[in-house]
Every structure is written in structure tokens, then in C-alpha cells.
Image 1 (spheres, helix red, strand yellow):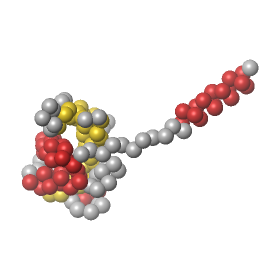
Image 2 (cartoon, rainbow, N blue to C red):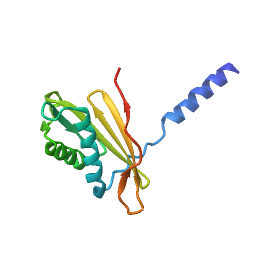
Image 3 (cartoon, rainbow, N blue to C red):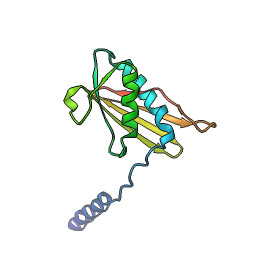
Image 4 (cartoon, one colour):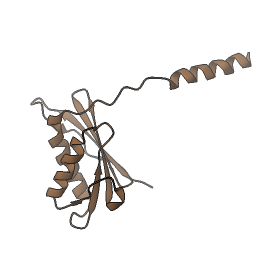
Length: 140
């Protein structure tokens, strides 16, 4: 009986690990300016502009890099030096991810070793609006 139970547990755990993962839904291009402006404002509140160089990396779901490019432009407009290329050691690493959840969106920023997330809700006008403050998880 024990052998049967052990075999059943192993078989069921294998089925659970073979689930197909759906790709993360991309955000709409019209939502990029709202998310980029908000992300840049958050980063500017965390780092001193004139003394900070940032390296903005797109999330794997941002295959075109549209959000990362928009945030980099916003940061330059706020006085930040933005490192070009793939050299993360050239500044504070900022990794961005925006996930479309139904009509709404979740923005996640990895700023150095810290992570901040904010929920955006679709307004009746069709625009995204911040629906929460940033939730910040500090590295320990």
C-alpha cells in the first residue's frame, strides 16, 4: 500500500509541473506613455538625478523595448544619465515589466536589488490611472 501511495504522489506531482505556461500579455502601445512617466517619477523619487546613472533593461515580455525606451527618455528629461547598451555595471540597474491583466495593468520595477509594483486601472475614459501606491520590497 505504501508503495502505491508513493507512486501516486510522484505521478501527481509530475502532472502539476508539466502545465503549459501562457506568455505574458503585452501592454498596449497607447498605455506606454502613462506607465513610463509614472515609472520615471518613482525612480526620480528614489535616486538623485544629477548624481545617478541608470541602465534601463526591458522585461522579456517587452520584446520591442518600447517601454524601456520610453522610460529612458523620461529619465533623461528629468536629468538622469542613462547608460546605453548591455553593460549593467555602468549604473543602477532598472528592470521593467508591465503586464496586461484584462483591461488593467501591473507595473513592476526592479531598482537595484529592490522591487516596486503598482496597479493601474482602466478609467471610463479608456486611459490607465494609478489604482494603488507603490508596494516596495526592500532587499535584505
